[in-house]
Image 1 (cartoon, rainbow, N blue to C red):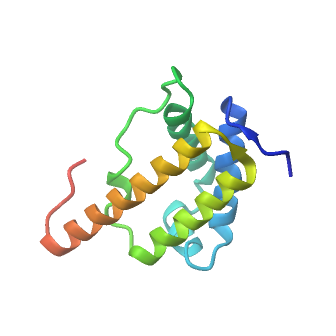
Image 2 (image 1 turned 120 degrees about the vertical axis):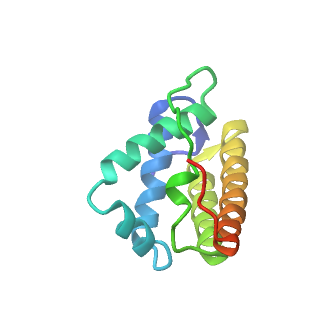
Length: 132
């Protein structure tokens, strides 16, 4: 494992994404959800995640254009899944990186988990179709 450092470039983003999703694919709570949805399209998913996190973490490198929520709207997940996702994500960030961008990654991950869970529950409980 490499030394803990700052998130500075796309290679650091790729290390974060690859390490994290490697854990997700093996996790007892998350693997079935992700593997059933993504199936054999992991390389495409990882490329999208590289662009998303590059846009979030690397100033002036906007490479992700899209709406992250709609693909998640119908997932069979609840609070337990998001808690595990955050635990793995925080653990991955903390094992690899320090500094402002690492803290921003964790803040953004937490923000997304809270928002996605709220919206998924809202759509389930209100029998409405999520906007794309």
